[in-house]
Amino acid sequence: MTLQHRIDNVEARIQAACTRSGRSREDVHVIAVTKYVSLDVTGAAIQAGLTHIGENRWQDAEQKWNAFHSDATWHFIGSLQSKKAKDVVGKFPYIHSLDRVSLAEAIEKRASSLQTKVRCFIQVNISGEQTKQGLAPEEVKPFLEQLREYPHIVPFGFMTMAPYEAEPEDTRPVFRGLRQLRDEINQHLSEPVQHLSMGMSNDFEVAIEEGATWVRLGSILVGKEGE
Ligand SMILES: *Cc1c(COP(=O)(O)O)cnc(C)c1O
Image (cartoon, rainbow, N blue to C red; front, side):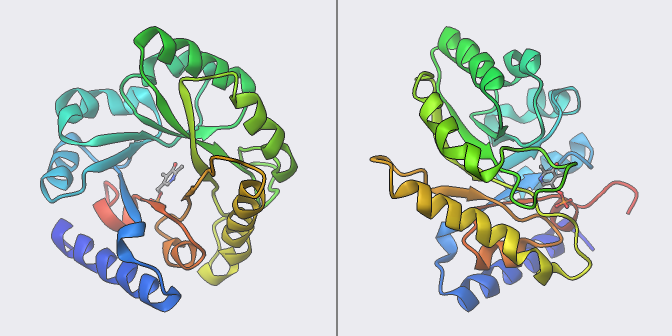
């Protein structure tokens, strides 16, 4: 399949998921995850109109970022070591993996010195799987309160990853869980934290039906080298 075919196919499926759930297409943003593909494919994806690019390791992203940083908006989606925050802040205006105070401190320090703000998604482990990163649901509200001490961090949304399921429908409780957590937390906040970063190649339609505002799509959208 060519890149344009992939894009058209994904677009049709996003549209259909929006229609099924009575949502507006404009409320769902697509991040093209380019971690599996080359510099050239990344450039082609941006040319084709995919202007939100996601990468999960700075070492792998560096070359692409240097080549295309002014042509796209960059999202850091992978888990981030605090000492690596300085590589990412200032280059990636969105970080999807904020899950601890030590990382918030590192992001704040760098963002403050650069006089920039970073939109952060708080990563939540809804499924409870040991191997998954993220705060436990009950830790999220106190964490948000702590974030008030970090004025260069904009609490922009929540992020979760569902376990891989052979039957995508089985991911629904995870995505629904994050949406319900958001809605519950927002009842107590004067400035609601609106966005939901959830849904990947295997499960994005279910995530959209459950309220995703950002989907992170790699293999299904830009492909995977070797496939
Ligand atoms: C790799 C990755 C994705 C995209 O994965 P696909 O299944 O190829 O769509 C999305 N989110 C995160 C955090 C990732 O690491």
